[in-house]
Amino acid sequence: MIISDISNIETTGTVALYLKKNGLNQWHAETATNKRYNNIFVIPAIQEYNNIQRLLISLSENNQKYFSETLVIFVINNTGNSKEDAKNDNKQSLKLLRSIIDKNDNEEICAKVNAAGLNIGLVDASTDNLELPEKDGGVGLARKIGLDLALLLFDYSNLNKKILGCLDADCLVDKNYVTTIVESFNKEKISAAYIQFEHTMPDHQKERMAIICYEIFLRYYVLGLNYAGSPFAFPAIGSTIICDCESYIKVGGMNKKKAAEDFYFLEKLAKIVNIKKIDSTKVYPSGRDSWRVPFGTGQRVNRFISGERNEYFVYSLKSFEILKQWNKAFLNGERLNSDVYLKKAEIIDPVLYNFLILNSFKENWDKILKSSKTKEQLEKQKITWFDGFRTLKLIHYLRDNGYPLNNMFESVSELLFYFDVQLPQIDENQSPSFEIQIEYLQQLRKLS
Image 1: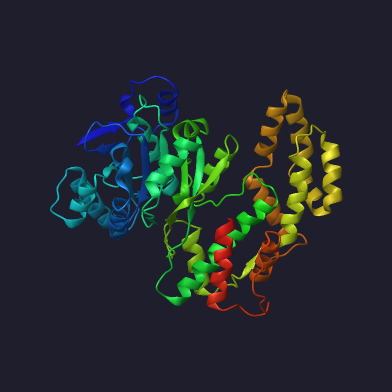
Image 2: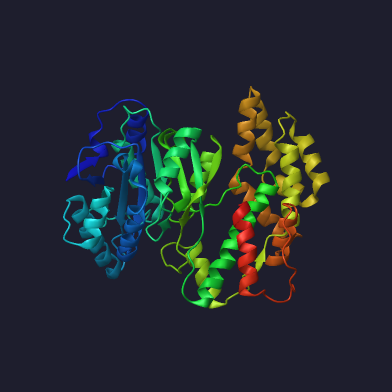
């Protein structure tokens, strides 16, 4: 077994500079050989022993064309305060992965992975003295550790793209997942992308309804941003994110957030490159409830099942119409002063105007105008200031100040009308049947 860590950096250039500035010295990558790779997929995992096996089988069944230049790294992690069940489960995962790395084929899963030629690595962020710190311990830090260490394992002498992929341990993937990503990035010169996704459907009816409701909510928001012409119209799902190492370094790497690390990472990428959609392969995130992060899929499923509130509501379509008009006025290549933009905003909608005032638009924009000498600098500053987070804040402000949440299926139907899709009419006072909800979701999957 070969150990690679950040403390022994001998290379020069942007990678070495990044790692010396941002790298995490406590952890190291364990791999079978000194081999270097072009494509590395990083998977954080806590208490995922059974799911790791399913994912390994799913990956092993991929087309093997690029397996020799591809590495899959699992970051097995917990904090000191994690439950004993999680720590014991992680020990099983470490044992399994080390058996694969050591080419021990005593277990069927090890034999299957090794026979396929899939290269496996691991980062132990679970055992004593290697556990994640309580303050930052979570999915963001686990991803960052794996992605940062991956930079040490690329074959920089090879001219192909150096691809960093994010997955989650409870996912499955299509059999063309690896080949599609590698060929899309290299042939189309992609710098960052997200993969089309579909949540797997749980066995129990209520959990199925919960994940359908949540995925409709997610996709409606993304499609609403698309309709509004936002440069941040992409889903924030960690297991769908792919980028090249150059873009990863330029944005300062993954963040350490315990939740929404995917949102903030994609947002940073979108400020420097175009986020492409790869829809010729799919990732299948789990639709389970979960304790692992404070919000996101698992918590939305938990909330739906508990029945603490009606989940069949989404942002008003009017909010996206206001956003569309603002984006058209603001992101159009013009160099206007703050008073002109504020006047335009007031004409579009007084609530938008109030939002800009509350967010110190005038003061910020005046500074941006002074510091931006070229059109390119100014356009970059526009999406840096009115970024994905501020866009979401605007949608929330509109929700709370005159444009409340609307019936989910009525709003989806109205939005899809703008994309020339017509769906069955429903009674807004009743939830539609399971079959009709699936039909709504399928249409959204085609467009977002």
